[in-house]
Image (cartoon, rainbow, N blue to C red; front, side, top):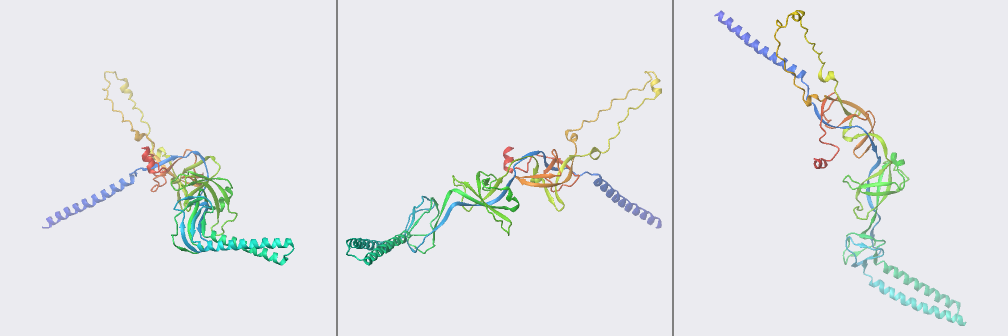
Length: 417
């Protein structure tokens, strides 16, 4: 009985020991595998840094308005008798746009004209009597004053009658009518907007640090949000006072609008182009990464041979035959061994040098058209990463794939492919 118990105990110990040993062996093998395993190379897009021509500029967002544009209102009260325009109609200067009921004013004007004619006749009679010596000076002075007052009354009533008409102060395009026939209008009621769309005005603001870069008659490029800037204008005014609250200064430019593509109230992208500069180092803005420690880029460089492939083994020397074999006659020499197969030639992928990353801190400068100027940190010829740097780290292996350019829109790349 004791013998069987001992045999069962020994078997149990062997089984448990085998299980524990297998687990230890497995964990050690997994540990060694992950310790020696190289992470796969990350795929990135790159560009070569080289000096380029740089056209700096001052960029801002502006608001469009017409050089001549007003909201027309009536000066006097009255009922709308006739609307003489329609929406989006081009009108000439002094064209009548609105007629109010003026029957009372016309009657008053006719009565005043009749009284003025009578007073003029009385004045002429008084002058004739004075010339003959039968009229007094008082009678002549009274006749003259009465005639002058009557003429002034006619002028006044004519002005009141003219206020019953709304005329265009300049030529332009009218908007949608804001009144209806038969509506009673009070002074100051807005009737319609009138805009001269031939020449537009653009107001924009820039920081006070950029104010010395601008001057009157400088060229301004304008765009409406699609990336292009087809409109060209000139700076016509610079506000001499800087806003103490925002530290911005207001600039006004004028641009021709013969096709009517610009509309009052519209916002536009504004760019004031400055003199061109040469040999400026730039990289795409997607290549620059900002952090709490500064701005940096990832530079792709070939890995060092020792780091890439390990120490190269020394070339094997050919075996020296012993002297006894050399002294033996050819007949006694051992039979020649079959030739060994040469090692397989490395593939194209294996011939490519391994690439690693270097995190380089830089000092960025101005930005323009998707590019950023680099003042310090990189040199011409460096290959910097432009996309895929979200999970990169210093010293990491990478593979370059430039089939996709992140600096261009996706639709342009699809068209090129």
